[in-house]
Image 1: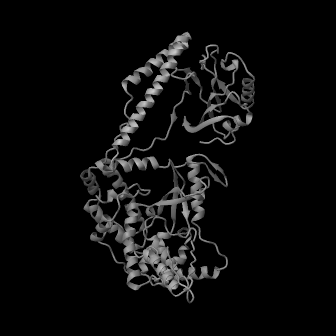
Image 2 (image 1 turned 135 degrees about the vertical axis):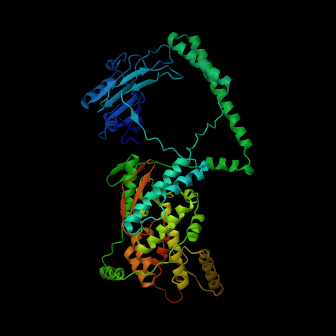
Length: 585
């Protein structure tokens, strides 16, 4: 985590949880030629949480077992006394200078503020530095968030997955209303995840791909370290010269060995077995930045703060466009929809086993799972009784017009847009992940929507977005330019890009347009439930934000969202003479 406001002090900081409370840990260094100023120290100890800071500040004072006191040590002591800080120093010197005329002393110290646990310092054996390592014991345990165990789906026992899952599914589930549908979907998802966890082993730890250092070099390193420890005790100049010689020899031999290893790796690359392309991909991979985010409430430093900042941006983004000039239109749409939804819905076209099996076969196994954590690969191995239950659930949704609440929630990850400021939350493109079973039902519903659109010719000819003939738009433009050129006429083009187009769609306006297009009643009713009470959460690294409402927009990542948007802009006014319109959603 960054520390803002530093001038001379070099600091690396992280935040951990110790004894259930957050603690900021800092490693610090101050060059002897730079001044020690209070502003740098205040930047380190600010924030209102306990702080443990360790390092070499080149500040000596007998209070923390230094051999003598210096002016910088007095400044540090005065700051500590005035800001409720405690300073700890080891009992023995932490530095043994290479210069035999210099005297060993205590330079590496620990400074704490608001830390309730005691601090004990222990010197460790030196390796190749003139500073001895210092072990810090705070008498309490720290808790880090370890990544969850990853499952190796390549070794899943699918027979063991199907048998217990089939035993848990009843023959005749009661699905009479929306609440029962929600309950069964939640139970079904839980049963699938439980069966998957029981039948899928944990991913094996990868062996270190790096070859071991040759035995001869390892022996030389051990000899150098042993002579180094002897020299720290005896200060024998002969030992010092031998240590320096061994250090140069180890460095040279390590560089030669690593160069030989890299040359052998390059010579082994072959386009035929894809090793060349894997290496090129690895070398060209750009690490994902994790900068601080600047928000209206301040600077977001922690992953949890960044997740909330991104969620704030999403919540602001999914709002209807407020236009006070058309209140009459809004009122007219509200009245029309209230009247429409009071009429009985039409009988839906129900699904069947063949349709659901075909939809499952079309799922892509490489897609990331949604908030429920059920991957598409899992759905492809569902037993027959589970697929029959899905058919029953899908048909009940079509009959009751209740879109399940579990499927209305999205987990949003953010990717930095090209050439955008990484410190601004608005510079990130949201990638929405929806429930896998919910998207399977969307495929069933999408087939019914597209049937209405194609059979009745509801999409205007100028609409090329999200259709198989998208490339025809470019051919049409080229043909028009060529024809006008042959007729010695000019061609002008105007390209308009609507910002946040998906995110600001007026849902009631879209529903009203669907009623004017005479869509089947049951489709409009289900889409209305689909839009109602949608939520999302933003994830960043290891943190996830609180849930936020989505009051406008078509669902990002939804299979039916592209056709929704195309129908929403389908009634755009036709152009005048000699002007052609082309829509690309």
